[in-house]
Amino acid sequence: MQADIQADTAVIISAKDEQDRIAATVEAAASLPGVDLVVVVDDGSTDATARIAEGSGAKVVRHSRNRGKAAAMETGASAVRLLDGDVPRHLLFLDADLGETAKQAGPLIEPVRGGSADMTIAVFSELVRLGGHGFVVRLSRDGIKRLTGWSATQPLNGQRCLTRAAFEAALPLAAGFGVETGLTVDLLRKGFRITEVEVPLAHRATGTDWRAQLHRARQFRDVGRALAAREPAVVRQRDRLRRAGR
Image (cartoon, rainbow, N blue to C red; front, top):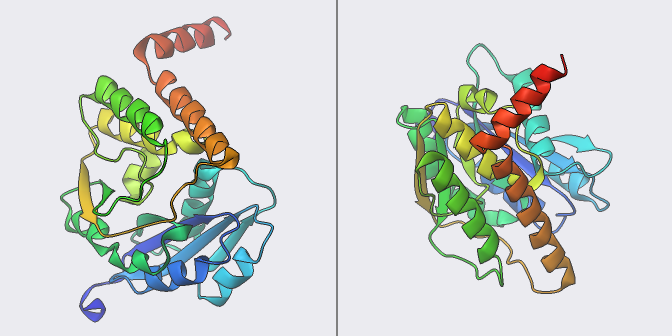
């Protein structure tokens, strides 16, 4: 029962034009045991996302223009820091379109709360077919494996819980849709413990129209950039250029 668990976790939801689902997601997230704060980062929405989220009980921070997922995550974490007391909250990141299934996210918090993991990554027990999404997943999975030796089941899954220390250690986050891949690589390289947790969450399926294909192209670009920036040869060359420019 929630009353038996000390409030120690904040939920951060990045949202853009999610007025149809944001209320259900916020309300479900707020019901999770140990959650006493839900922050919605409205990332340049043109609909009523911010107003509905605030009316549903979330603290809302707005970007005047769309800045991307990584920027929204950093903004949300900064907002939580301002509201933290003496003990920093754990950070649970959820997608805005989970709806009422967000109430099933509790198992993501438990290993972090119990001290057995520094970050958890959701593995959806019921996958929604995403029509062509697999090539981006393979790029991320293969890159993480090559750089760290660890094989992720759903490397692009944005449902994650982290300690504040783990989040801070990963800053600055990889840009855009490369954020999950970069976060995983950076934390593993720094010795943080990552655990995958199967949860019955579900979000809206990505379609197959030209907008969906453009979305996947942007994902592929951002994941590729995140991996390239972490390749040893690229890092060495970057460091040499920086030293030469001093």
